[in-house]
Image: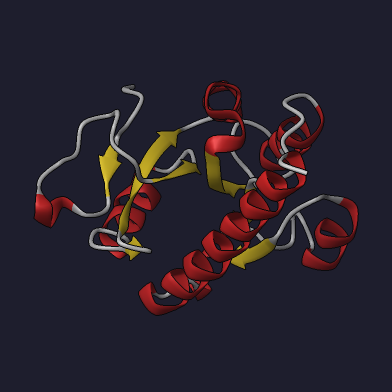
Length: 165
């Protein structure tokens, strides 16, 4: 697995790894989900910057990427059920507690909502959104991305202004 698996704005040519973009992590054990996500976000731009999308097929791989990117990780879209029934929930907890990252916007995406009921998960875990895979049309995916990236951007600005005072 490469560090950068794909870029959303491939119409302008692929920027080098050093170029700026919104760092996004997609963690899911289903290759089809990665393909659909790539299709939904292929030309997505936020503030004239593409998404730099990192993919992982397990919570362990996702955690390694989260460690590497730290607070530069803008959003992570995480499947709940992967190698275990709650691998995604364990990953959320590890990102928040082990990595110490409270700025990345975390979205849980599940194909099995009964295994992790939304009301329980939203109450018990520090996540920013919860989506069922079947409800995420391309338009709803874009809406979710705009909201999450705006929130991440604003948190970064607030953090920067606090450290300058």
